[in-house]
Image 1 (cartoon, rainbow, N blue to C red):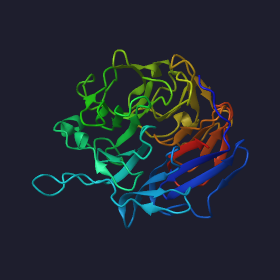
Image 2 (cartoon, one colour; image 1 turned 90 degrees about the vertical axis):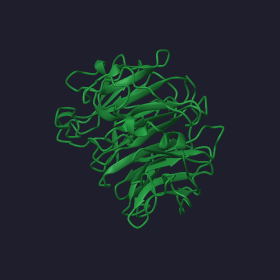
Image 3 (cartoon, rainbow, N blue to C red; image 1 turned 120 degrees about the vertical axis):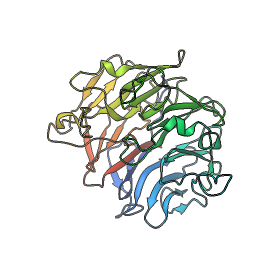
Length: 381
């Protein structure tokens, strides 16, 4: 396992239904402050806020009331912001008009280390876009957006998706800039080995009990998929139907969530990986019964950790409410920093930011009374 460097500071970007909050911690993560007296993008929906650690640029996927869906960027740690001059937008059809209209930009991902000014974005409806100039202008990844089988893959795009169908979990292989993996609600996992020019489904092994054919090649519903940042071919996903790990040699997923306690189940949205150890991951289970209330199980929130690649799981709830806490955590709202003793952070649908500085052993409430939290991203700097 790689050795971590002692950070000078920690930054946590918290995207909410009513703006962006930037939290700053010192090198020991003992003292924290919040940027300004007002949130950035006050009153606007912030679906995702992400920093490119190689350039320091922060991008924000926002849905502004007067501008609609767009991307903002800052090169001075949030002191000032500029809107992208050409935000993600679907290409025109050959016979005129637009095939689709971006409802909101949902997911942001920096490119490969060898391409420090490259970013990717996923949208609703399902769309994939790329920037080659650090987020100033965006272009369609036509290999996906104009693929002749796109509608066949997606079927009813808005099926059972409260906020619209989403292209999310855009992963750039840290060992191959050409290799991309994406997740799509009502679509499944797909991957490309040529920067998005061609695609193939990667859903074998995943249950899809909501489909007529539970072993269908596509039409699945991954909630969050993460490729390990330091170890080749280690990929995990939290799916609508459980927690899975990819067996790359077989190009098949195996359901490691079956090892979770039966009374808890393995349904949830986020999955977070240890930045150096490929066998350590954390999930936040929610009530997966038939009504799908999107609440913590029995009102007793807990994080579950595995340190053996999903073979066993340990409940981590010390410091969290013992009962009557009916929040959950969205797919982008749980993150790990890169410190030697990894810090974990999650934001709730009731507007709380929780953190642990000992890899889940003890939890502390970092902030209260924020708007509904959509995303949390943490950085050791």
